[in-house]
Image (tube, rainbow, N blue to C red; front, side):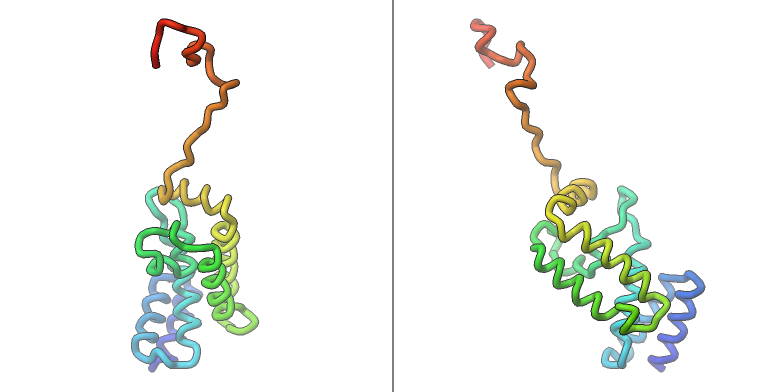
Length: 161
């Protein structure tokens, strides 16, 4: 039964019905979590499914693509670069097309790699988090050379700031 569900999920995925494929893989995983490749199908279709979801800013949730959504307890900034890299490595082992001959594997690998490239670099991750509304933007610093003359209290002795 599990094998038929996964075959049907693969068929739905080829038809472009990602949500149906993911739902079928979820059912197969629930039915027999120890079946040979059920976890690979579940992850591959799950990556594609989460990549179709957009947040209020129209962005893909890269944390969800890496399967980290449930691990962060609402605070993605609590995740270390090692956490992100470990999730990436675990997912690559499951969906790499050389080890998993599903039509979903190449695309899942590409999406996982793109998510890791953004989130594993502190600078790009911080920018992504700001864009997603996860972190506040860093405070802007004004240098004295950029300040207007009227901002300098020393030039206007009678006025206090």
